[in-house]
Image 1 (cartoon, rainbow over the protein chains, first blue to last red):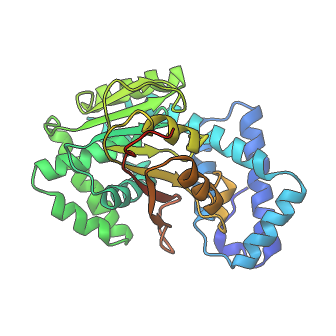
Image 2 (cartoon, chains in turn red, brown; image 1 turned 90 degrees about the horizontal axis):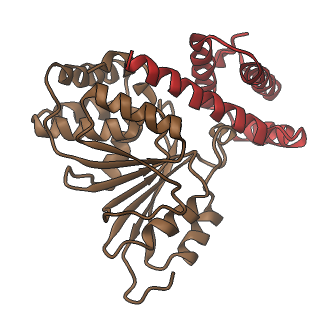
Length: 95
Length: 230
């Protein structure tokens, strides 16, 4: 399930990695996932986002995602997960 | 202070909040409003800790760590902040957080109480696009997830009779980061300038290559027009 930037060598790899994360985000939204797994997914997505990919790859990936109408959904699911992780962390801080 | 539990989560927030504090020229006397603070008001916490470092005379040391983007220096900065946990937070700051989610407000108030920051950071319940503030502000920060940004800025600034520094957190448009947050585009910026008299654009800052930071930000200055045109 893990996606590491080092394995991304083409625009198709990048697109597939994002689709993989999209699937994971959907699973998080549908099922009760342990907080550590949620944090792990968030961390791996953030790692991918920080990657220095060629601008033409990014344009192509957005084009493909937009064709599938996935951008808004990906954003929504990511933000939901981020909020959920914050709730978990907040609860951990106060014990 | 349960700083240890927050530490891992500060990787993203500390360099971002530090850069924002620098760009805004934040001072402990600034009355700051952060819109969309969520369950874990990390930016407000970072600002309060930066002020505490100033108060304790260790800000220069922290700044030296944070200016260097290497992982070891980042950990040194976190060590320094963790060292604050041994004694109560004594510095003054006037930071208000605004959120419209009841659970997030409750969570964040508990976190701040646990961290000993309830005197420095106050959490308000409200929608940024309609809230009526009871006190003036010097600085307005808006979270990535807080929308619609122009309406929020318009509402808050329409209540101000003195200058306000404004920071909108966003993501670069031609970047993978735009997959997770809605970018505030150049067209949005132009619309904001057109719709809100007295606002000027100051700066766009995007994360440096290899940076831990996810967000970019847009910085504006507001001086109230002599005759209100809102």
